[in-house]
Image 1 (cartoon, rainbow, N blue to C red):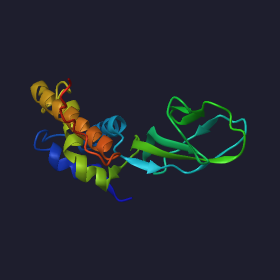
Image 2 (cartoon, rainbow, N blue to C red):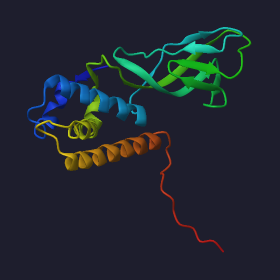
Image 3 (cartoon, rainbow, N blue to C red):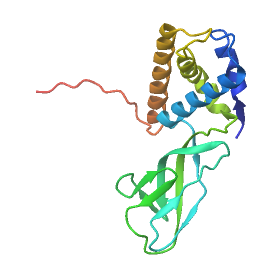
Length: 192
């Protein structure tokens, strides 16, 4: 998957924080992207299949892409059986726990939500193209409240924080709507 480095966000940060050191900018962007991805599940991939063994209930789920961590489990199947969160499994990263011991060997397949790790050098191009403004707003919200910096501006930090939260809300709605073919609008009906 094509990646975009944190440096490609700099044009969104430097007009607001012109004396910002590059590494500090990268760290703020990585933290904002991690929060964005963890809250919205906008970055998804299929994890490597894991062999389920009889009686064994806990399995490590590794991120399928370097520089990423598993933020959540989107879907799980054991063999042909699809499991529901809380009813068939629980997840406390990186361990997926089945709620019943398997009776026979099968493959565990997972679709996972990802977030950038501390060592990540960027995010997928598709996430950048769709959500760069929101991620940059999150970075700016945290940078602008840093005390004693030339760019400190708590009032502007609130503005960018609101933009960040609004962007995360849009991402969640877009993802939720992508799982259905029907419109998510409700039409008024008269009750008699």
